[in-house]
Length: 81
Image 1 (cartoon, rainbow, N blue to C red):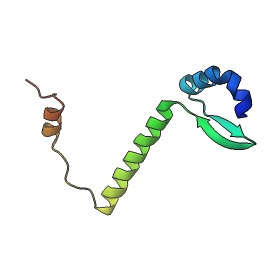
Image 2: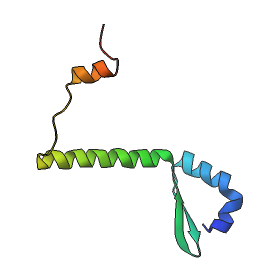
Image 3: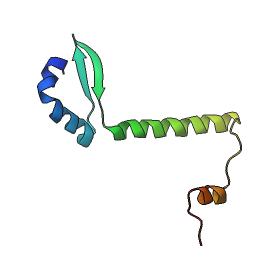
Image 4: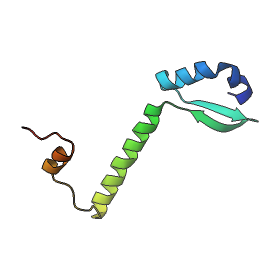
């Protein structure tokens, strides 16, 4: 959608992207200039990248030492009383 056309519909477009997980391309002179996407889409992509990076490092044998689960629980205040 052209930026000039989107200007008057911005609120609706943002709601469509946020709630419908629809990606909306904004164009400037026929070229994609920006994308409206839900924050959840970005979070999902970041999670997928983190998992892929972990799997790559594991396969390469370059993972550093981990943190024991008991220590993680303690740091998060999840220790059982």
